[in-house]
Image (cartoon, rainbow, N blue to C red):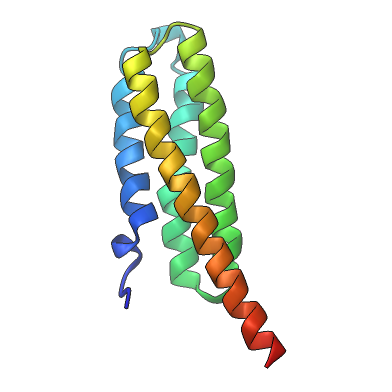
Length: 125
């Protein structure tokens, strides 16, 4: 039984993703400080933050917060691709961070499906 959101695999990977985004954006052009860098950091931070907040609120609200995290993953995926296409990050960094993001997307979808199914089963009883 999970006792804290900090034990959730998606939260742990999300936390690592934030650190990875901060690390790779250090090498971006300084004129992107208030553009792409800021947006990528906000998206990344949103992922574990919404997992944590939703977990603490519980119930049906949790699903909505997981969906917000999922949306942030999609935004970050776009921004990562753009960063690579613009030559701001290496292929190695792109693959590393994008793979982590993809793992989180899969976990979030699994959580959402399991919780949704649990509510559906409870409602039909």
